[in-house]
Amino acid sequence: MNSNNSNPGDLNPFKQTEEVYKEIDFKKEGLSLLTCPRCNHIVGGEDIDAEHTKAKCSSCGYEFEFAFDSEGSALVPELRIPEGIEELKLRSELDLRLRWKETTTKGGRWFMILFTSIWNLVLLPFVVGVIVSGQWGIFLFLALHLLIGLGLLWNLATIYLNSTSISVTRERIKIRTVPFRHPIWRGRDIDARAIEQLYVSKYVQSSTNGVPNYAFALYAILKTGEKVSLIRGMSLETQTYIEKAIEDYLGIRNFAVPEEAQH
Image 1 (cartoon, rainbow, N blue to C red):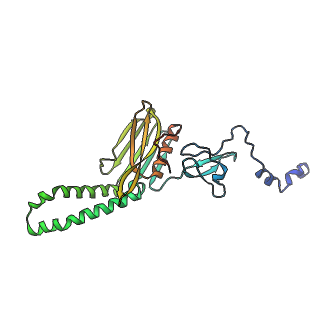
Image 2: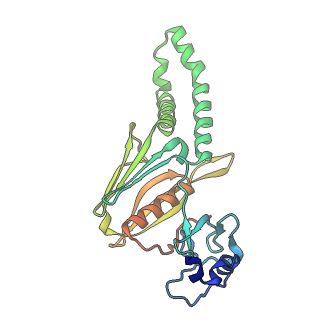
Image 3: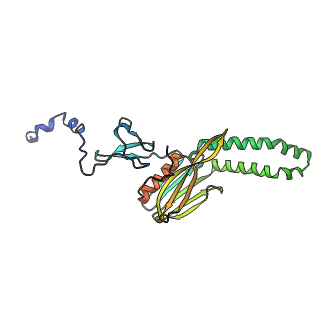
């Protein structure tokens, strides 16, 4: 009997379709356009793949995924967690753990494997010859080369066994590397409230046959103007994600920096 009081318009099977395809009112209050999570540049319609919910920034070249917000009135950029990163986000703390063997640049890893192998294979016949002949004094002439070879092996071991933990609170950012120490990847403990901006910059880590192998470093610009290196040697995808995650957690508004790495 309640059906007698129902509105006939509610039975229209095309009503939902009409609502889905109505034009977006760009003057609507609170409507936000899609912006690049990397540089905050507004992404144009020609750079948006709506079918696969992917977009590419025409300003910095960054590719990312997006989603509709809960009301369906705006597009929200999404950053996927890169391989090798574990994240735990709490109200009181943000914890990131990076496994080096997956987050360092592939070119850098292959260069280290190749260079370390060649260096130590060249030394191996001399070491075997000294042991067989018993002329231990020759080791004095090989000492420097042996130390370099051991150092290369140590560095290679750290790449495949080490991980870096980043603990972020409203007050501090603490960066620690375990289980092995490394001269480049040093620990950091800085005041989070003193950070003005974070950015990623590219540098030449090594070269193979004259071709440079690039790595990326995450820097913090302090409110005093000082620039502090936080993490070095990771891939651009890894560093970009760390930068965005920390900025979002601390509420730091991103802006372009001249030496910032571009895709």
